[in-house]
Amino acid sequence: MKGYEAYGKVGKTYAKMKDENFRQKATDFYVSIQITGTPDDCLQKIEDLHRLTGVGHLVTEFSFGGLPHAQAETSMRLFADRVLPTLQRDPAFGGKVVRKLPARSTRAAGSEDVFAPA
Image (cartoon, rainbow, N blue to C red; front, side, top):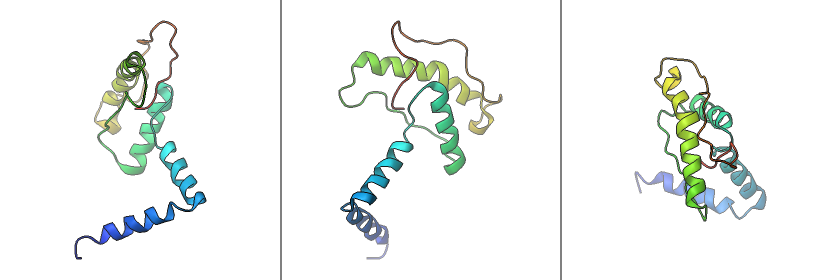
């Protein structure tokens, strides 16, 4: 039916998921585009995503699966403290200053300077 041609393509893509090699490639791709890691890792992934797609907005998810609330909150605060200010100042995202990580951290005692996923 006119206007629904894209659904046929989606069906073909899902049919390929029966092939283990295709499924592994799709999984690897999905994992590679997740924004996870240290603040610098995340900034690099966001920059790569922006360069490749021109993305101008980012929706983040800090609580997933069985992740304890405290860990999700630590990740959110770390993102807000170490990643967001850089994005707000980066000219590529409408800011005025070139990329520079803030010096301070909201790391909780005993936590690592890593979070996942954004």
